[in-house]
Length: 457
Image (cartoon, rainbow, N blue to C red; front, top):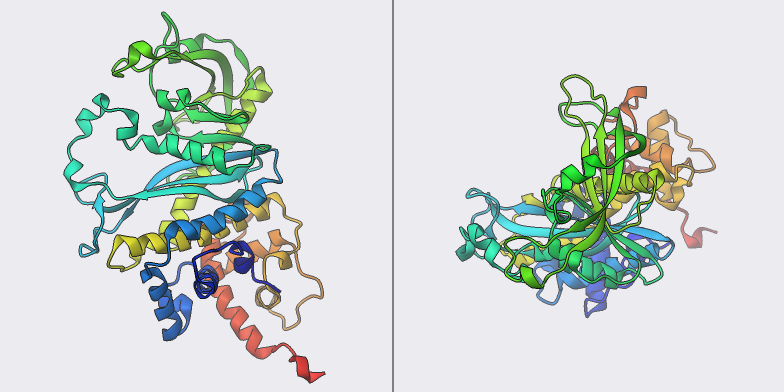
């Protein structure tokens, strides 16, 4: 049976079939033990050298690695009426490797590395479908200190252009018959993004932040709070480091708005207002000592009633997935711990680990959304059989594989998940820790239960 990595990367075109096969092998090894070092995941010195040679090869373009994964992502997207293109930016900090060439300053004087802007395709039910596009760059050290002059520059001269570039790339990548909604946080609250021409079926869903004029006399927050309440909405607020998960009930308002051009725009007199819908959700009775929920969304989606507003709030909550994706890349795959000498090598490693990170995140949420799927559609026989026997302390696996939901919880148990009633569903961290242990269990299982050779009959 073809491995998931071979299926995912069947469109790989690195200019040499040997490089294509090497990419599949590297992704397979890293995905089995995502938190392991390259030597640990590779298993042998020869395999380890092959990984580093692959990342060192000038014939391997990071864009080609991502393109092979993106084509598979597009095939998954085709099965959906709606897809969310969730965007965000993160830093890869290599300040602890000062000899690495080709890096640039990040957000403070003590950080040095690469900027990464990713766009993740997510289903309308909240399952990550794969990477749509990714932009990676190093800031020019000479540009440090020029932030105070940004208002005088055109959008294409600023880093803010990345939001527009990702929107255009997503529109081109997602099939025309699929409606795509770009979801982003406050940093994307930019007039130029709302004013950018979009193809039919492309929409924006942005967390609002600027107190801007919405007409001749009104301002954004004032206008929204003067709008009538259309209903209430109760949802779960995710747990934070200092607070457990909880239920929040919010008053919901929506209104038609006109986003005015920025006052400092050099061509303000030639620009026109952009019509959007606003959705405001404010918590009515938060627990003592807890910051109340207050979400302001700006969208080009139609919002005519409470159901439309609830859909916007639910889809906006999936923006969390791009943060988890970057978290898996940096903490799960330990990308910032790689000791590579040049930024070009880091970019090849990043493109490789992007596939591993998506697979981990997909497994986490696919088990929640489609819990009854047989786990043998994701795990090899030696993996789920070894997993079952380890958890149940038996030497005899069942004749039929358990469900994906059950198997993922068992994997998380190997990673420290306790599975108490109050624990909810396992997170991606316990799953990546559990996968590392499962790799060893499956290897031992294969030694003790070798598959019969074709000649044995």
